[in-house]
Image 1 (cartoon, rainbow, N blue to C red):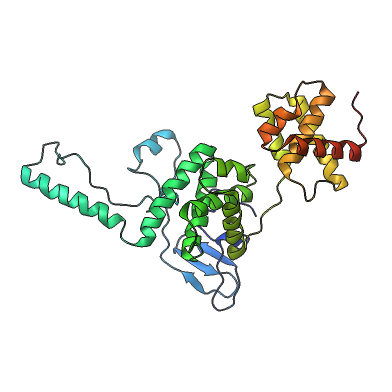
Image 2 (cartoon, rainbow, N blue to C red):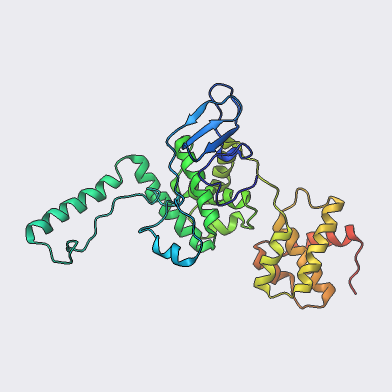
Length: 317
């Protein structure tokens, strides 16, 4: 399953996450006509959705001056914000358009308008739920140092969970954490369950359960975790040389060809390959240091290390 920043919020026939079945031919093949603002079934031609909003600019920029002169006020629409970044905001400063201070009567009227505007932004239980969830999503994403694409994908997953009513009986925090973890898995970002649990109050059992619910009800095809992606992550913390990182990735590639990586934790394989590569290169890294970074036990590192050595017929002097 491939994602890109332009695909968010739109529909594609090759992506189950953004597809919806046609009610007539039951096919998940649709295209978007940006000129008419319609989403059309490419199989039978039925108009599935109309009056779509195009958030792109209506001009072309040939140099920076044009871009600056035609800039807009406010943030672009985003799924991370509970109102998608399209609210009406009344300024908190009590000044009119000419910069003059408002009279006491107008100040009182502006205060009432401002208060009711805040109340109207969150009217339903869904709005309140999304407001709390998106704030939590931004907090966790900031601590995990996740990209905007991961956040947008997680926000879309959570919104669809709300629409499908699969969040019923589950906490907001667990579903937000599961949405972020699912987003990382879909985009091949090396984040483990333990990393997300460390900065949230969600247990590993609840996070795994919520993750399986999202994958099951949304019919997602989760790609297999590549152990080599954890190599550079662990090596950066341990300050291991690029030569050893290359050697560890090479060891994992040979191990995958022999079929000994299936069914094993990717982080433990990455840790064991790094330990083996440091032994071959002469770098002084202990099993304890690597196990602490990978958040696994020394026994696991040692077992995976022996399996790699025996399968690849390596000898350490």
